[in-house]
Length: 228
Image (cartoon, rainbow, N blue to C red; front, side, top):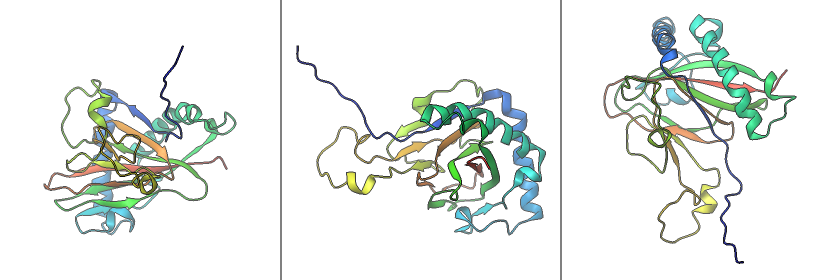
C-alpha cells in the first residue's frame, strides 16, 4: 500500500513555561526592584536595549543584588533542566547548568525596541527571557493558550519578541506562493505575557518590535551556561 508521509527535520528547539498566578507577587517585586535599580544606576548596561533613547537595560548579575532575582533564578533552573534534557543535552550536563547573569530590560516609551541580537559567550548553551508583566493585562494567568501566545509569522503588535529562523536567508531563495511559511523561513512571534518564561538556544537571533505607546514593557534576560 502506498504511504504518503510528512516529517519535519532540522527543527529548532524552544521551551516555555507558564508560572501562572503563583508568580504574581514575585512579578510585582521584580518590577519594583527593576525600577529601584534604574533609579540607582540610570546609566545601566550598554547592550541591545540601550541602542535607543526610549529603553533602559540594567547591569548584569541582578541575582546578586536583589532577592527577587535570586528567587527567579531558582525558578528558571528548575524549569530549564527537563527542557534541556528533552532537547538532547546529556544527563551529565543538564542538571548542573549554571543560570547566570540575570539582567532587566525596560522599554520606557514609544519608539523603544531591541535590535536583532544573540546572547551568550562560549560557555552559554541556551538563553531566555522572563516577563514579570505582559503587553496586555491577563486576569487569570493560569489560563494559558499556546496558539494565542506563540505564533508563526510576524505579528503586528507592540513589544513582540520575534525569533528569527537561522536558515532564513537560504530558505528565502525559494520564490513561490505559500499558504504557510512555517517551514520556509517564517519568523516566530511571541506575545509577552506575565509569568511567561521563554527558553531558546544561544544561537537563536531575536529582537523586540518597537512600542507605539508609552506603556512600559518589562523583561528579564539571562544565560544558561555549561557547568564549571
